Image: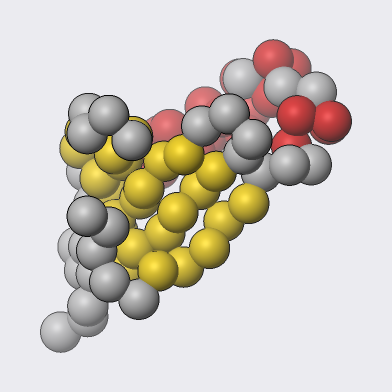
Length: 76
């Protein structure tokens, strides 16, 4: 059995906490506590959309201050 993985994705303006469970489902949570649950399939579609359809919305300079760090335990 795989353990869930936890990530903190942030830039200078916003922070998201990401949980990836052993089924591949993804939970996104912002600092205000709002959550979005994505199945593995929905997460795959989201990645495809960001990589292909939404890429033109983001400048290369927007990506430079985005950081991803893996957390050892669930965020509080």
